[in-house]
Each structure stands twice: as structure tokens, then as C-alpha cells.
Image 1 (cartoon, one colour):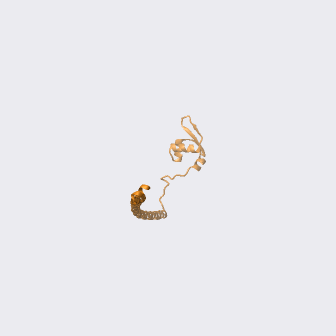
Image 2 (cartoon, one colour):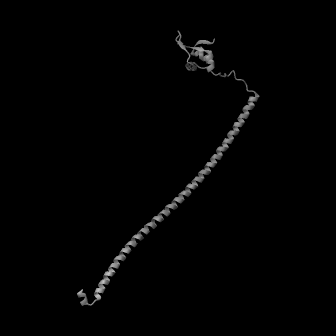
Image 3 (spheres, rainbow, N blue to C red):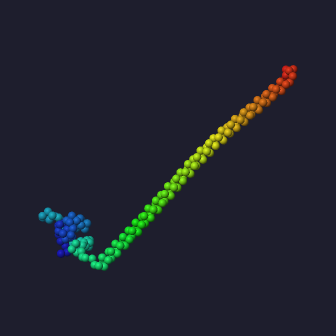
Length: 175
């Protein structure tokens, strides 16, 4: 009985799966198929090929009670896993604590930077005001120098007129 023609239902029963799963399996294995006189599709099954591609499944009847060694091993494994879970929880707690501390430090640093920025803005405002005052003084100095020059010219003109007036009248007429 190495090779048989089986319907999907029969193949599923022998493999312990549904008829749809058997149909999918036959498609994966590229089994030859043909329609029977009853209208059902049958596939040509080579059991050696099917066995090579199928993993054995445990049925509930095949399960046996665990031995004491297996139970002890399982208990030790569970205990180790629980200890590891606890260490991971502690690591998460330390990480959260470090995160909150770093967040507080960053907030303090941000507040300090804001204060420094405000102080720098105030200093920049003072510098701008001083520069404006220096420009006003420079403009005033230029205007003062211009006024001093005009005043000097006026003074020289008035002195020349005064000198002219201090000369006797007859010298003034001559020239």
C-alpha cells in the first residue's frame, strides 16, 4: 500500500487533517489528480513522498504523563524565567528613574538657557540703545562742528566789518 487513489476526505482522515487541508497539501506536493465516476476528485498518493514532507503530529491519546525529572526541569525553567522577568522589571524601573532624572535635568537646563537668552536679549537691547545714542551724538557733533565753522566764518566776516568800521570815514571812502 505504497500508492493509492484517494479523495480529499480520505486523504484528510489518513493524515489527521481536514479535507481542505488535504487538498492544499496535494497542491503543495503537486499530486496527480483525476475525477472519478462519482464526480469526486481523487489524487494519486505516494505515501513515501507524503511521509517525507509531513511532520508527525501528537494526538491527545499519544500524550503521556511527564516524569518527575521533566516536572523538576520545568519547575526550574519556570523559576529561572520568573527570576529573569523580575530582573527585567528592575531594569525597566531603573531605566524609568534615569529617564525622569534626565528629563528633570533637561528641563532645568532649558530653563537656564531661557534665562540666558532673556539676559542676552536685554543686553542686546542696551547695546542697540547705546549705539543709537552714539549715532545721535556723532550726528550732533557733526552739526556742532558745522555750526562752529559757520560761526567762525561769521566771526571773521564781522571782524572784517568791524575793522572796516574802525577806520576813519575818509579811509573807508577810498577803499
